[in-house]
Length: 240
Ligand code: NDP
Image (cartoon, rainbow, N blue to C red):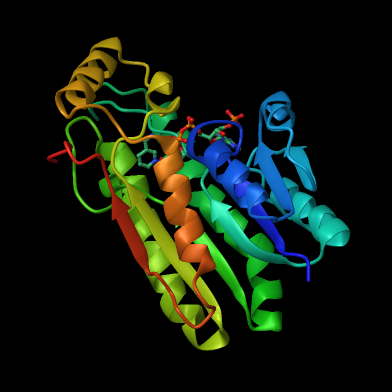
């Protein structure tokens, strides 16, 4: 039997792109969402629908999932991965950056969940994988607004897990430490970026996104009656 559809948000770079490549190689049809459509197409994956969707647009997320399900059958999993890390201090960070992170990191996850969850509950099976962060478990310098969004992802994921556990649906939280991706590049404070790069270097470098993709695939490939509730992974040299 052919493998079921998996939805991946933020698949145009970093962790999302690595996860898309891995799950595609394992035979899954995919729906890939991001704003940079050309980057999704560049992955060149078979049985894959690429859609230019801003995940802060609830209707657009919903429409893309319905379109993919018509083509490939029901979504068996979603990887809510799209996110932004805009580091700053609350006294001087542009408030617009808080809004962007709250809309994307929190509401984007909720919209992804809503697009697939009713179908999963009706079928009594499915897996929701939310990419949070170690910054969803503890604090870091200059991370105040970001940790707020990632603590929210951890809290919502665990509460959702409890909500749907008896209905056959699994909820998994992936909590990586620093990963070598485009994530830091969007922070607007140049000094904070420099300090963060120095911190990564002092830890012997960050994780390769492939390591996080492997963690996602590991959690997903367990039998449906096994839920890996959380995976926390970081470069060995990362002390914090
Ligand atoms: P990247 O910046 O490389 O990837 C972020 C992805 O999110 C891109 O594909 C981007 O695509 C997408 N994205 C951003 N905004 C939107 C939007 N409004 N709508 C749809 N897609 C969007 O970073 P990572 O791969 O590192 O980040 C992936 C996840 O991992 C994030 O949730 C991040 O918080 C988390 N994480 C990352 C860590 C790290 O150190 N890198 C550590 C811990 C967690 P596009 O711009 O094309 O829309």
